[in-house]
Length: 233
Ligand SMILES: *[C@@H]1O[C@H](CO)[C@@H](O)[C@H](O)[C@H]1NC(C)=O
Image (cartoon, rainbow, N blue to C red; front, side):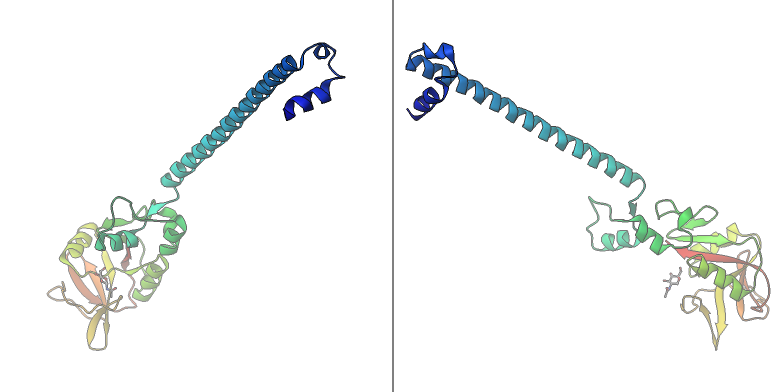
């Protein structure tokens, strides 16, 4: 009733054709008009919904693209976390990851050559979780150790037959390893006490250790020779 009255009152003078119509037919016209408006409203609603869904689709597409790019380049498997996760038995289904930044923090000096943080740099040898660098130039033991530290590691610590055989097989020269006579004992550069040793029958004299084809020799630390650096992955 209210609508009928309002419509009739408002449109009486505007619409000449509708003046001749009875109030009932006027009402039916208005109702149809209302239906039209309702349909228009629905169309608008559908359009808005379409637009909304389209935007969501585009956003999701963008997310997919960003993630795929990130998985390929930025995000890498973090060796230390991988290890921790394996110990805690919570590794699958997600590979523990660290950002490129964390990777760089782990290996500040050799990072540019690292691919994915888990591989050794070009020119380095890989054994288990270590990278070894056999120098092509000669230095004193101290300078060698400084160079190795600058590369993010230290002179090689040979605590197993496996590493010993590996390095003996790779190197054809005489190399400083991270072994030095301190006080009464021989100690590795990472403060591990010397246990397994591979001294030659006649290892000569000196306070620093040299690896030369299968055997170790002693030499004066100020002598110049090649050296082997080790970086833990
Ligand atoms: C020293 O290095 C050896 C060989 O890489 C490793 O097995 C050992 O755990 C290290 N020790 C310390 C105290 O870092």
